[in-house]
Length: 446
Image: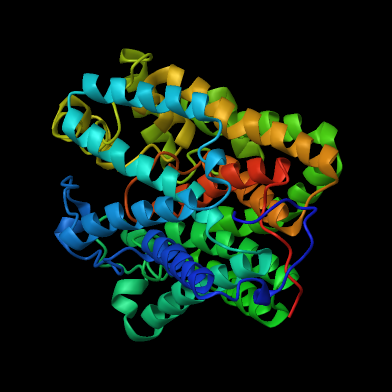
């Protein structure tokens, strides 16, 4: 985020009174909003799930406009970031990111669907770059909160517009080709109620942030409308995680000794119970005794299929977008044994990472997704404590590392999943800036 250090003297909007400064601020705001709305809504909102094509294995459905914006908006955000004084802090830790993405290129080349894999990797990289660059575009905490407000209100407003005027495209129905059992669940402009639920949780965190930093009225409005929509998605896990993450973030912020057990222990235990129950009847029994569906809404079949595939390629994986919904999988021998060949992803980001790039990718990603944020939290303690902006990033980070035990949202390039990946990357880079006291300057409340 642009600006100087946390100890800088607060300034008001009158600090940038020159025409070039105002122009830069306006352009930066427009690029930020363009990126946010593109990742949140995409160029093709509202999906007709009653069409046979909605269950097709063909994933090559990107429009020319989508391709242009996918290139233009991250490029513009990068240009905007490069003209700030913090351009030298882009994409840290660079050495780790370089290793991760070089490995992904290597596994993509080895993939039997190398073109699809490398294309997906390119788009994933653009999301990572833009998630970092967009943090340098706002000029203050309040400016950041204002931009989030506009983007989120547009997104939530469009969801409610769909419920009111396009219910056939915004609410799951019994006529849906893939999952008619979800009839009645709200999804807004998203393709699935789980995608909508995850977005509403992230919007709720932003609402809490906006309440504290800029406008109580707007913050309450965003929080109330997001929570109400979330309740109607039927996303039980997301609904339960919203208050849980706020509570856990409070504990993590104030009691440093809990951080490693919560992050590594909590995520490890959830993965063990989830994926482990698909492999072990004993673990499935333990999960059942807790009153939890041991199949995790039929995910167990998908995890069994995925773990079997991992056993055949544990080091290099299969590349991005090169396993699920491929002709070899859907029309191969596995298709005679399980419906899971129709799945579009592993419904677990940690399993998905192994499928994409093998165990090396999982190991490197754990360093980026866990060790660096935990190190940033320790540095924030030494620097004097958490700001409201840092608290927002902490909540997003915690939510994402846990929800990805049941959903595949990391290293994504597909519409519907981009929002989660974008905001997760934003939280990773944002915590690093907070740890270095390089976050945006404080602006007087209005």
